[in-house]
Length: 164
Image 1 (cartoon, rainbow, N blue to C red):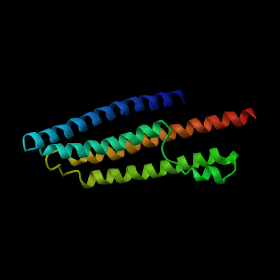
Image 2: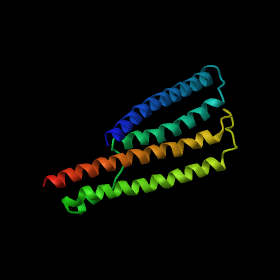
Image 3: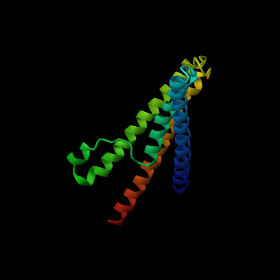
Image 4: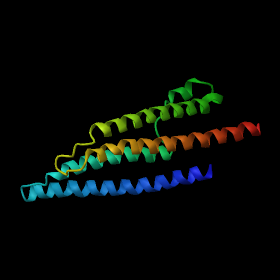
């Protein structure tokens, strides 16, 4: 369990660095486009595309960071409806369903990579396989982070129930 938690922690640190880089690239790209357009009356064609792809990476890897911090969404109305002693189990069920959803998204992400694998982006000439590869990569990290969270919760529940 300790190894999985340290891998999860390392992934969070790495993803935060990626997010900083993506946000910096997006900011510089936007700023240069604004300066060139309004000061010089012309712009760079590739900045909009770069910003769009960087924004996709920001959203996907940002959601993986949120998952690693155990802050992704759940159905909190269940916590008020069911008896308090079952809330933790309901939350675990939600996490399992989250893994099923992320797993399905991984499958469709690879499907999209195959479908668009031969295309290249219009201005940057980047293979679209790389861009679509962001999705299965991020969803794989999301599955791992959620799995580690479930294991931590199950071991915590086992300790609490064993102590009773």
